[in-house]
Image 1 (cartoon, rainbow, N blue to C red):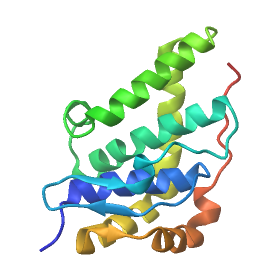
Image 2 (image 1 turned 90 degrees about the vertical axis):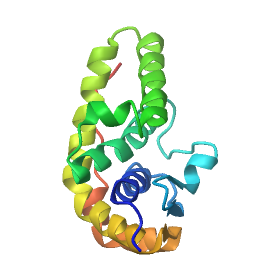
Image 3 (image 1 turned 120 degrees about the vertical axis):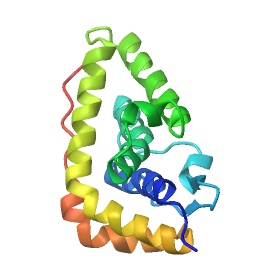
Image 4 (image 1 turned 30 degrees about the vertical axis):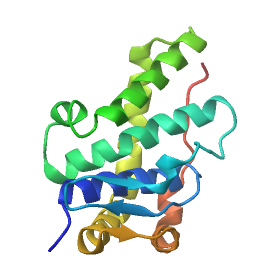
Length: 168
C-alpha cells in the first residue's frame, strides 16, 4: 500500500528546499494517516546564509512543502494553507511580519511578493528532484538524508542558485 501523495510531495518540498538554500539534508518520513516530517523540523534551524538571509531561507523552506503539495495534487493553495499547511503558513507569516518590522523599508506585501518569486524559481529549478523524492516517499514512507544527498547531487547545478534578494 502506498503512502499518501499529498504528504509525500509536502515533505519532499521541505527537504529539497533545505538543500536548495544550503542547509543540511535530513531524513524525511510520511505516514499512512497523511502526516509526515523531515528531521530538520525537529532541530533548531541552521542555514548557511548569515543573519537576515537565514530568515529569508526559512520562509522559503516553510512554504515549499505547501506549494509542492498544491502543485502535485492540483488543490487550492488557499485551502491547503488553512488546513494541512497551517503550521507552515503560520511560521512563514511570523517571519514575514518580523522581516517587515525589523526592516521597515519594506511592507509585508512586498516581502511576500519576493518570497513568492523565490518559490516560483525554486519549483521551476527543483521540480524533477521533488517529484523523484516524492515517488520514493510514496513507496516506502522514508527517504534518508544520504538518499536525499544522492538525489540532489545530480541536480545540484540546477537546484543551487544564487537567491537574489533586494536590500532591505
